[in-house]
Image 1 (tube, rainbow, N blue to C red):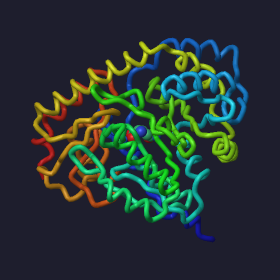
Image 2 (image 1 turned 45 degrees about the vertical axis):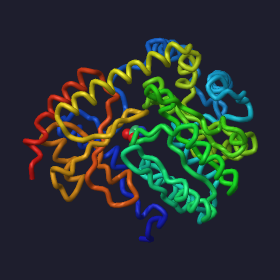
Image 3 (image 1 turned 30 degrees about the vertical axis):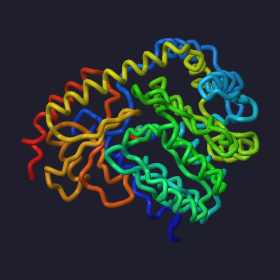
Length: 387
Ligand code: GLN
């Protein structure tokens, strides 16, 4: 038999998704793969029920149903403070996972360099491999996960084609300040680099932090592919609805990549989600209130257990420092944690470029009772996780 593709030979399966399977195997409270265990808004579900009877059930326009793009453009114009054209500046994708992949394929040639902050969401590594791009990693330094501007400029001097910006950041919860985004924007303009964003947690930013769209900074819309999704904002991670917003010349190309990758996002789900896109500001305030409460509950519980952790400024992840347990492998630690303690976590090493084995990631996008159950179990962590 001939060998399978070299391009994908080095792939491991996604550690995040694997930990969901491990959690299921041991009946653990799954705080690994970040998704809610509470329902999406009722209005969206009611609309979905109507659509089951009325349709649409056939393909929508490949780059997104007209009414979905219009509702999305209206919402994002309001948030970004810039009019987004529903007809020329949006492609609707199958989740932001496809948005990011399509954005990478749109911008890069094999061999091009792409700047990635470390820690990073694990898909970016796979995106780079699939598109043939070479990542240049720039560290975000704990505890605040700030970058060093000189280190970033050194990366830009290597002539990258693009920089990937996850803001708010998964897994470290960093929210890039306007000043930090201005530093990145100035470098992008100086060295003529595209920015590909992942802004799926744009509505989960804890006070006093604020989300700034880098595309909204002066001169940046032209060179930014803003990727996001409805997954986290409306608690519909399984619907796989995402999008790219970018200038028309970029979108023209991204539409073709998307068309040949997936044809289109699910038509009935786009139709049902429009209700959500039309929600008023009170919905987003309420969502944030809910996550702020979960953050408090979870962090307070972790403090009581007394294991050091990062305090997220945005998104819903916490990195727990497991140094005291002295494990060689964070993956082995997570497997044992699921089996013995009954809580699913993601090994931190899957997010870092350099060798990091003393962190695990937990998320708190769960019902309060689920979080309390997880905290009750984690109380026994010291006892049960001793080597
Ligand atoms: N973003 C979520 C996480 O980091 C889940 C992503 C996914 O599995 N598609 O856990």
